[in-house]
Length: 144
Image 1 (tube, rainbow, N blue to C red):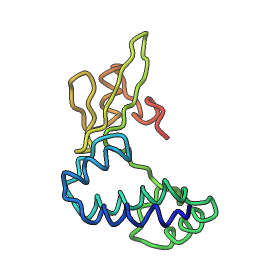
Image 2 (image 1 turned 180 degrees about the vertical axis):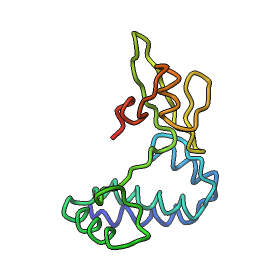
Image 3 (image 1 turned 90 degrees about the horizontal axis):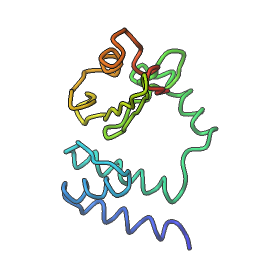
Image 4 (image 1 turned 90 degrees about the vertical axis):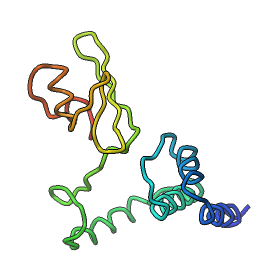
């Protein structure tokens, strides 16, 4: 069956959904809750996800092409040396064993991090609370 015959009705359905329905669909398609209350933003992310599921992700060639374009755009959010900076998506759970104890951190919708009932402004702050010394939080939790 042609993918477009599957995709078009799903996209049409997304365009009719209200906020609560969009949030539920987000949970279904992404596997975690969204903190977003933007109907327009959620519709865009869900439509993209539906297309991604049915058509696949970008090819490496397309991704490289888009990165080359973004490198020339001063408004693009690129990291050092033209590498994309990846935000950690809210709802993501990170874990790390330290001195025989397993620690789990949840990324919150407000961009903060929760570990053992405490809220931290950065992963580095979580790592410091766990180890008692300064760490790069992304290095400590193995986030690339």
